[in-house]
Length: 49
Image 1 (tube, one colour):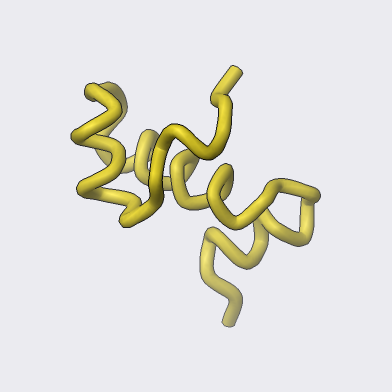
Image 2: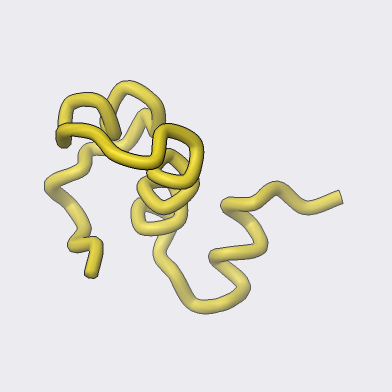
C-alpha cells in the first residue's frame, strides 16, 4: 500500500511538497519550525499556496 507522500508524488507534487502537505494535514496549522519537525523536510525548499 502506498504512503500519502507516494500518492501525492504520483499527482505531481515534489517530495518536499508532499511531506509539507501531509505535515500540515496532521497539525492543521503551525510555524515553519513546527512543520519542519513533523515533516522532516526543510520547509524553505517549497512554497505552499
